[in-house]
Length: 607
Image (tube, rainbow, N blue to C red; front, side, top):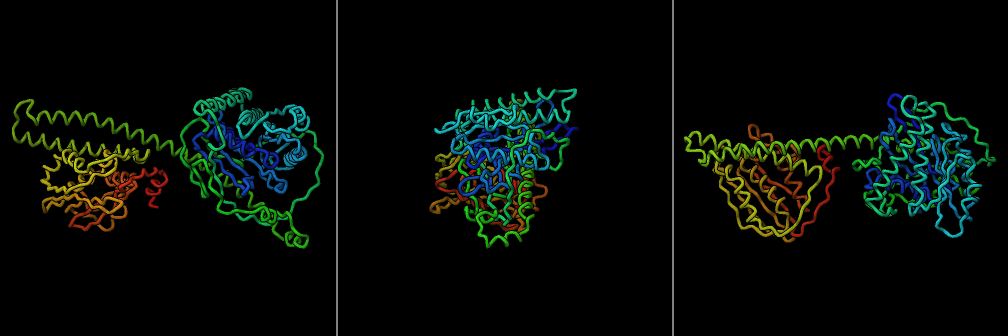
């Protein structure tokens, strides 16, 4: 049973899709996932066989946010429908707060559906933390097929209580699926609020339930406005590698006739089923969660790393054994399968908790990026005004000034230029790390580009009396704006980190390496200590011999991100006291490299 935190007014509940094999349970949960997580912010976890039938369970954490003063989270599960997985169905159903019973409407499968309903009722009565009077919604699926039972015929078989609503559906098309889900969740929430007296003095159970309905349908309407058709091909999911299943004895029990719905509701919630699951149902941005199993971000799911045949599954679950093998199976540890299933369910719960914390960190990161970018923009205004004022004085527009004053003004202009560079680096770094590099490739003459860079750096060049030699440069296919940033940082670093005991000298040259251009920027500066070279391209990292020299430690990080964005790479050779040569490997046919926040995180963590 889901966890209820009365003090924090939090409802964590479990919704289970139950029914026959290949009846549409997983497809229904996929459709719900496609609406609540249209950009795959939170992935649907599935453990399937090679026939795409659920083996253990499907899992989807859903966060509805605050509704009627309550913070509501739902764990969505499906159970394996094949009869041989009856023990697994019992485990997954344990603690369910509501059930969507998915019926295959085909006339030929009536008996299978009836047997599945009976097993569900038996499991609800016998499993700890559940009872047969939980909210149940019946979903009559596959209504688009030919030989199907009428809704009246189905109602007589499956609506065994007067409070059970039914919905016709075609799960593959998304028809009727979300309606059944909304009804199940609202009934679940209303029962929770009423059962624990959570609505007193604030909101009635029906008021909270109606709020849930309205919120879910507003989310659905928003998604449908942006996407006219919700199809299974558009709903990526996460596939997990199937572990080796242990051998367990078959669970045999005689079928009992249906009992009247007289079980009393549970009196208390168990904290052990607490869910920290987090979805994107409120339309908020989420980042790709990390899970120690396979994941995909596209429409085509990846294949499990291990494929298990039906024969192997039958053997692992105790089915299809020869009589002679029975003693060996009976000697197997009966707790092994129980522990395996419980650990998988616990992984699913931890999966949701981790995703909630990840979402919180993602929002905080976005807030920090927004603040940093706004601050940088605000710093640019007074800097531009100061530079304009000093330039006006330096050019004599306000009258003649004495030589010492003119020198001071020029020093101020130099300081403004350095400060503007620091501000640009901060802005570029925050954009690159959060949004990635967005490049537009075109023919780019590096000779003209470098001329523009040198004009921008003219104050620093004149101040340090730097000698710069630009050898014949090629025309490359690249993003001119991005390469301007690259050379601004490399040449600026070569100027700033020049050696004081000798005149600064910089050489820029290029070599044709067949399928790439190798561009070198060589200086005779202070060099890079051996111990610092492994971390030099990280943000805010500088050489240990740069004390007293201004800089942010962002320039080389920006260079690396931009060159890698072209599909190239950056390397360098250096000797302390003799200088450094940076090598840019630029492909002649550049390919936009995808941005990955995971790789950025790994870099920050020194992985």
